[in-house]
Length: 211
Image (cartoon, rainbow, N blue to C red; front, top):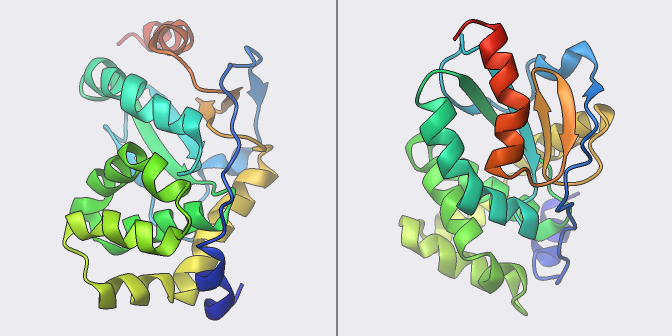
């Protein structure tokens, strides 16, 4: 997608779909799940944690929003900060606004990346459903200190756009077709997991590793 076309489609009112209920079915995934991608991994936790969780999310997905605002803080406290889980977050945009949001989060710098993701999830209703997505996103990003010039330059970065899309294409090859989708030590779980559902899957893996 070329720059002019992408910038114009950010204002289209497309909202990504997601799944709110876990399938309960764990599936083996191809070994290339952990292969290096076109963008640096955004991860939390120790590299040698016994459990690795990879999440594919869309910034306009309401179920992804709920997971990150309601469930992820408990996962970080009980599993990531205690060395039990390494959590990797990957882009899987369903629409131009989600793509734009992911690009903007990448453009603010590593130290502001997750605070920006958190900000955009918290303000999702304002920019994802606004008549002008670009205006609403720019208003949200002003909180991070991003200037209009930097905002336009970020969304005009064709190389970054292609890399975000490539991450999503990689997810599709792994069988991702809805968000959020998790791979927990290589096994696929679809849907916004509650902390209880997450614990039911992860606790036995941690115990088996002797942690």
